[in-house]
Image (tube, rainbow, N blue to C red):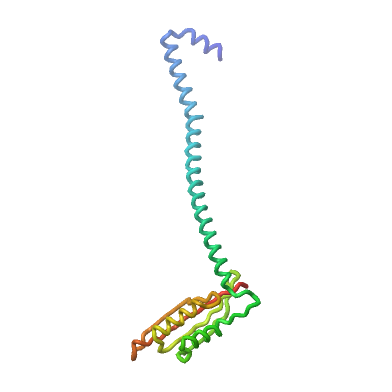
Length: 182
C-alpha cells in the first residue's frame, strides 16, 4: 500500500504534488481542529461557565453566612431574655400585674391562656387578652409595660376597634406570647 502511494507520488508533476500536499495539509488541519481544538474549546467554555456559576454560588454562600451569623447573634440575644429553666415566669400573672399597674384591670373582658406549643426547641406560651372600653393612652401604657418585661414578651397580634357609642374608647384584642428554651 505504501509502495503504491510512493509510486503515484513520483508520477505526479510538481503542480499536482503541491495541490495534493495543500489538500492533505487542509485535511490534517481540519482533523486537528475537529478532533483536538474544538473539543478543547468546548471544554474551556464549559469550565468558564462552571467557574462563573461557582463564583456566584460562593458569593451567595458568603451572604448566607453573614445572614446566619447575624441571626445567630439575634437568637443569642433573645435567649438571654428568656427565662432560664429553674426560673418560673408566668405570663398570665405578668399580664395581670401589667394591667393592674396601668389601671385597666377592670376593663378585662377575657384573659384566656393558650396551650403551650413546642416549636424547634422553644416553648411558646400565649395568652389572649380582650379589653373593653380602654383609652388609647391606657392601651399604650400596657404595651410599654409589656415591652419593658423582664423576659422576652411580645404582642403577636393586636386588634383595636373604636366603640360605637363612645369613639374615644376602644375594644382591643391582644395575643401576647413568650418563649422559653425547652
